Length: 407
Image (cartoon, rainbow, N blue to C red; front, side, top):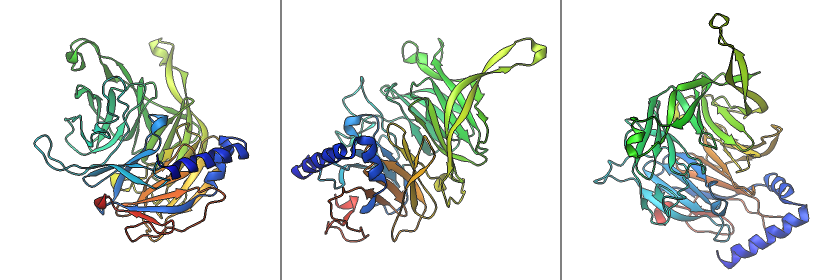
C-alpha cells in the first residue's frame, strides 16, 4: 500500500464517522457513483465471469475476470485506488492440459491444505491444481469457506461435479438439467436452477464405503442424487431460465432469471402430507418464502450461456447489483427490493455479462462488450470529479485505461 492509498483510507474513515457509521456511508457511496476507470483486456472478446473476493475480508481488494483463454486478478485499492494487475494467466496448451477458453471463476479458500489462495495461485501466478473429468466447457464454479477443500462445477452439458481440490479427486458426478448452481454456506446442500424457472436441491452427505470418494481414504462428502427435491415457492416464482443464484447470509437465497426477474428467498422446511393410501404421514419439503422481489429493467430474455448476466452482492448480502442488455447496472436493497443506484456505461453499448460490488460499496464493477471492465467509484465529497473515456494507455487527469497485454 502506498502513501496515497493510506491517505485515502484515513479520509474514508473520517467520512464514515461524520456520516454516522458504515451503513450511512454505503448508501452515500451508492447514490454518488461515477465512472472513473475503464479497462480493456487484451483478449478483445467477451469477459465471461467476474468474481470479487469475499472469501477473506482482508483480501476484499481483489477481483478476478476470465475471458477467452485468459484469467486476470486485479487489486483495486492498494495503489491509490487505481486498478493494478496482480496476476495474468493465459491458458495455453501444455503437457498437462490442452488449453482453451475459460468460462467461469470462483474464489476458493485454501485454508488448511495450501499456502495459496486459489487453484491458480495468486502468489505464484501459476496453476497449482488441475481437475480433469468434464467433457464440455465448465460454465460455473462454486465454493464456500466452510468447506475449503470442496469445489462445485457445472459444465455446458449439465454435468454437475463435486471435487476434493487438494487431491484433485472427483467425489461426485451426476447429469442434470441445471442452468446454474450454488453451494449452501455450510456445504450441506447444493441448489440448482433450470431452464423452466424451477429450483431443486441436493444434499451433500458423507460417502458410503466402496464409493469413488471413499477410495481417497476415509469418508468423503458426495452429492446424494437420491435426495433431489423441488424447492416449493410460496407465491410467485420464476417463469424463465434461471441464469444466476447466490446464497446470502441469514438463510437467504438470491436468484435471477434471464428476463430480469429477481427474488430473494428465505429457506425453510415445511411439512407436506404424503399419499394417504401409503399411510406414511408427513414429510419434510423445502420451502421458499419471498423476502423481496424486483425486476431489472431492459433484460432481453436470452437464455443461452453466452447471453446470461451474473449478479453480484456485498459479502453481507445487503446490496445486490445486476446489469441489463443495454449496458446499464443497477443496485438493489435485498431486504426491501428498492433500487438504490443506476449507472450506465459510455461508448460501449453492449449487454452486461457480470457485476460486482466492493463491501464498502465504493466500487461497482461491470463487464461488457469485447473485454471491457467498467469501474464506477465513489470518490468522496471533496474529490475532483472526472469522466472516464475509452482510449489511450496512460492515466491522465483521473482517466485510466489499462490493457493487460501491457502489464
